[in-house]
Length: 430
Image (cartoon, rainbow, N blue to C red):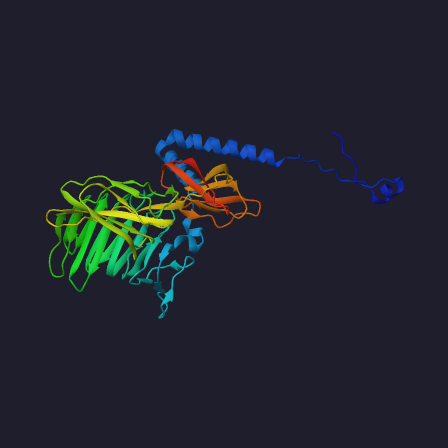
């Protein structure tokens, strides 16, 4: 064993060599750290799976939901509020923190406690963030009573009808425990998913009722609770119990198809053929045509005993039509589904340019891209195309479509009086 004497600083300076300290290290890249971390995580998960498979499954599902599920609590407030998707005539709202009534528009959002009022010839359709829709008919006053949209939890929406009529429709919710209700007087009707119902409240005549047209609903008043299924009605007069009864079903419309274009050389004198399916026990039917979805103005009306009729005297334009049935007891059905069609005058010149270059789905909305003549007018599924480029290029987005196959009609007219029509097929996945 040898011992080295300490270095004399003077001697080191004399020899011309500085004392130094040597440091050694090993470089580790971020990639290596990530790989080892993943390996360690895999080992831990493997041990958890071997020890407790149930705990592993729970942790896996929580992690998957955290990654894939949208966090509605972090969404903008505007995406969680109810909105107007259709306004017809004069519709007013009064915010919960205001004393003034203002005119509603498509930028208006609704919160809990807000009032909505429609005039004598007006209507409004309101959509909540969970897909539930309330169609507020004319002369109706409603209040938003609930709008609960929480992250990864069932949604809950509700409206109170002070007076008037409301149609309610529920979608296929992501959570089966979600709720949609409409409250009348001291009664509450809660619809199941994929259900439709019509609710009326007339305090002057003591008429309060709900009719289920699709799906089912639970109606509760105090301790009494009943279940309604398709074409059943619950009446609850003030001071009395709930009364359940059957109602006459409305007809199913056949022709013209919804959003279908009808091209005639002389639409004013050419008949439009209407067809619907028969209803059991019905002895007559009433067909109504209007230029508005609220049917505030009836263009044509016909009462017939069969299941079809021809109507003439219509000017070119957009029309809405529906049918009601009546039985021998003078009982009238609910109004059928409303269909829309467009009547177009066919021009003499047929050399109009109309080409569809492509389609694309954005969720449930279809995008139609094509080319036509500069200055031409286009209608896609009954909706006018507002923006056509100077070179004739156009891009149109449809309203949200239900899952299934759809045929979208594009019709156009040019300044020379020519018309053209194209159709594309779109399949919206479930």
